[in-house]
Length: 234
Image 1: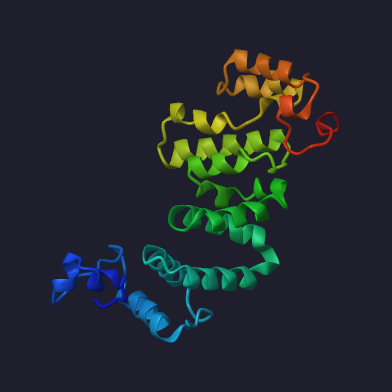
Image 2 (image 1 turned 45 degrees about the vertical axis):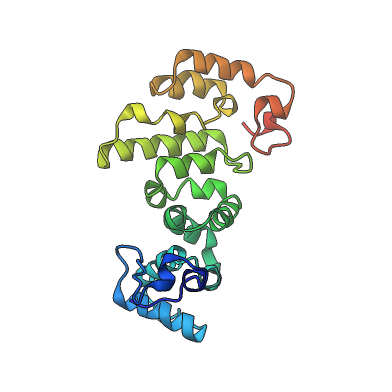
């Protein structure tokens, strides 16, 4: 396997400068055809993306991330966003788990910003949400700028938890970091006392504390989600 690597290995007195052969390891699942495309990009500066299948593009992105090829990653991501501009919210939902696992936070933030444009719709994309791990889902709903109504956020969290218990055999006691991102103080009192209390996911003291916090005078104290006037948002 040949690949251009840091020239310091050969010219700065490092051990490799005296070796006749150097092994450069790539990611363990690197496919030959993907590496061929990476090499072609190195030599020509171009890559035909529009004829590639989605999984192949993801494989190239994984390899490009491993080899720190930022320019190639930027080109591919720009192409994908342009190709899916008709529905960037759905594209961002489907790509976020991959980006979260393999690319830099810059691209994850770009996706979050797209999702914030239609937060209530995001919570209805249940199949896409089911592929979020708990860390990613919590990171999304923890954002002050994710301004969906809190009841819808809670319902989406509840559906996600039930799916992960049923399909992923997750331990029901492991969801506290996600539940802590639900701002109970923004849920109407009648829902707090009925639906939230009955779901058994929150302690009674948390519900009483939420009812106290929602009466605090400032948005900062209430931890509002970007609302100028929470009292009108129900």
